[in-house]
Image 1 (cartoon, helix red, strand yellow):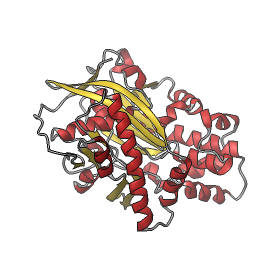
Image 2 (cartoon, rainbow, N blue to C red):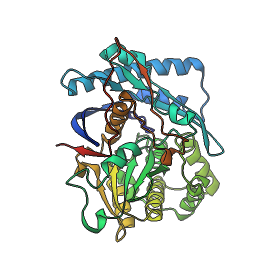
Image 3 (cartoon, rainbow, N blue to C red):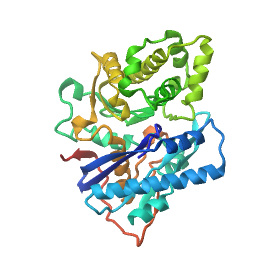
Length: 391
């Protein structure tokens, strides 16, 4: 899994076992493989609003395929040397949105190179089937969240007041995604806004670094109220779900325009403090809107103590903040485990997209398969209703 931060690949291995309407996940390990600086630069040079060429797209597609192939090989090692299938969702380079409707989406990563490297079928292009059904194609992780947050899924699930109302799963990647699971209500999920996307853009511009490590510079700054007000005026935040976004909106040029509109310079630390507040405020507002009592967070943003502290402070007295580690899923690898689950569902012909989340007309079976030898026909189990993580 490589997300909108495009800083590397998260690799996991997982074993799934169907037990009636319960699906059991046994995590087999995870690794983080960092992208080299020149590959990060190559991806960044191709992303909107930059102009590109079909040659650059082709070259990057195949280079990423080689990286994902090595990542898949590492995953097979984690699985003990053998796997049934690999899920390689690719690197999103464009999400085509017009008037709030997604018209198309593009992920790169040459799946044939992955299949050739590991010798098993590879599932890729997971978003297009949902887009074809009229959906946003994102977020897809709510399928995992809905099963994991089922009250019967884990003995470590919240009990008492925090475990009886709506619960939310929060992913803090380049973009902040929220899934809301409430008793008797359809699953709700959408992209809230930027998490690390603008913070990392500011770190590259002001610090010449890929990120503000531990949010240290943000902690040293002060929120610039005029800049924050301008950023919060972004129409995307007021749009109702289903909705999705990415770096086609929240990129370095977006930040430059917001700073230029002020007409005055802003210190680097204050910019970072303001962007941290922007992420915390928009996420907290969404959690309050859905009256959640608990937020279970994952993603790279949970490693930012400044952001986590601000989120916890904004939720104090209304919802508590914890991480997926407490439910047996490593916070840094949760999204990769979620895509492994989507692969299991597609392998068995079961839908992975949640129409109440994406806005699709039907629940689609996700992805396209690139074979690596004779096809295997797997028995189709019952659709699971919950996910239990076995330690």
